[in-house]
Length: 461
Image (cartoon, rainbow, N blue to C red; front, side, top):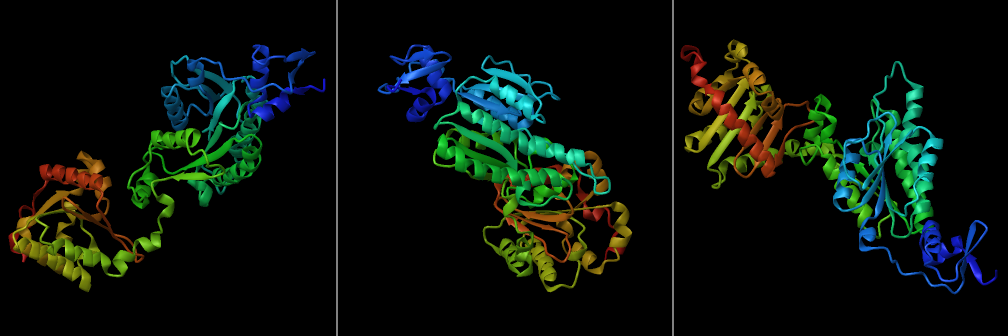
């Protein structure tokens, strides 16, 4: 048999999978191939057969998606199906299968905590794979006082051990054109207060990708990468999420469809990229909270406010503010800021400011000399909305305004939140954000009353 080679050797020479060579032999597409016992032997002189599969079969590239029931897994599955891929979707035995009626989707239940079960499911997949996507994640908040060691280990089994098994088993079905993408998290680059297991797994996963690409990118030509997602909108809007939005440069949470698009690009494009992790977090990791406040601390923030009020381009000014104590101080910058407001009104600019506070606090506020002096001088421009009324009628507006001061026109917004001594303030030209503020003040106009109507004129001066 010296004139023959094994299927394994032929697969290596032709840079295709052993399964594909075996299929070519069985279909009679390799001339002279013979089967001895259970093994096929290929003539040494044989050339790699041309791919005679139909156009439809060529288009139907096969991708395994592990974790099709979570929002991101579901999104990448739908995206792949829309691009005419065949998807083998793996879902946890503890979940219900996704409600997708598509003949190109094959669903398989798997216990992601069981290496034996994962291997069994992998062995049931005979297709030559264009890719593997792993989006299955396990996240659970931990108790410091009553730490659950079993839950900690479960996190590693699902988040780290399962992807390792899936990659090592299914890479056997791949060739040089295939790609593997794992879903990770920015928790990999930061410690966690309440999910040490999850954060540790994500960090280990990044290193696993770097390590496996050394082996499989060389041996098979397979690319292995990950997408590290940030705070995703589908996960809910509790207080932690609301606070986080303000620290994200893009000022919003991500959406599952956006992460799916990143996964798809790593899966199908970026042909010279392997062993890397794409951060998709709206800029969250890039924010230096200490440096972010330098605008205020160095005076640049106030200089921009001056430019805002004095520019010839400024014709219309709108302001929304809670009753921030720091504004009514003898601080030189704050004093000049109040003067800008007064001068804007005196110049006849289209200027309106809506104060939001608890009406019950009015007797106390009237004792604030600087505040009352400012209101008296700008009275025609000032309006009032009771915070309790606003919370009842439109709580989302309160979430937008928070505890701060928002100054804006059609082109720019200056936002100043009451904080500690670390600092405050940022400037944005984001049109979407400015439109959000416009809609908010449009709503406030429907419930606002002139400030003069709630202040007794005898006590006003």
